[in-house]
Structure formats: structure tokens, C-alpha cells
Length: 147
Image (cartoon, rainbow, N blue to C red):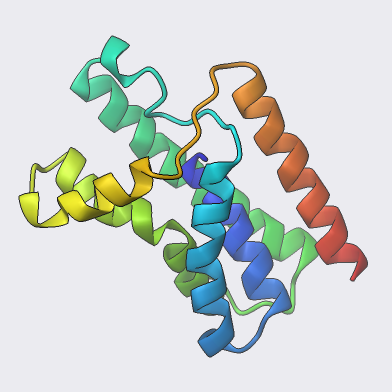
């Protein structure tokens, strides 16, 4: 999933689960579940991209995720504490943050995260890999708002 999708899922978790002892592990687990669903992200077809392009695309994805998460809190879940949402968003993206230390910065101590994610990551090219994420996120927001 994109960092944006993980951020929005983390935002929904923060809005619905006020206990960080529950929300943080759920957010981390949500990353694994979400990545197992066929999806597109900035690393899809990475062999066809330059390092610089993938880094910039990934950076913009992270920024977009935080902007949309902020809007999600303000527009749909205004009682959610923004600092708390930030913590849960980071937890929902944590595996990607740790993997990026290996992938972008070549820190071999974090190769385990890259190898771990490869076990369940399920890439799907555009457009369907992005369409699936959008449908999933709209459905999750609707469910969270309804309940």
C-alpha cells in the first residue's frame, strides 16, 4: 500500500480506538494486512525507476498521507487528538519506515524489515492497484463514520 493508505488507515484506527496499548499493535498489524491486498505503491516496478524518482515519489506519498490524514481528522473525526493520530499513523507506517532505512540508506541492520515485508507484499500495477486502495479506504471511512 502507499504510505498515504497506511496513514489513512492509521487515522481511522486512532479515531476509533482511544487506547494506545490496543491501537499501536492494531496499526502495526494493519500494515501487514493492507500490504497483503493486491496494491500499487511507489516501489511497484522499481526496477524501471531511478533511485531519485522513487525517493521523491515516496517522499511526496508520505506528505500526501499526512495532509489527507489531517483533513480526515478535521472533516470526519474532529474529536480525535492530532498528536495521538500522528503516533498511530507512524505505527501504521512503521514497517515501511524501517524498511526505508535499508532500501534508501543501505543500513544493513534493517534488511530484516525489507525481507519480512517481501513475505506478504502483493504488488499490482496501475490502475487496479490504486483503484483497490481507494475503494478500500472509502469503505473504511464510511464504516468508521457509521459506527
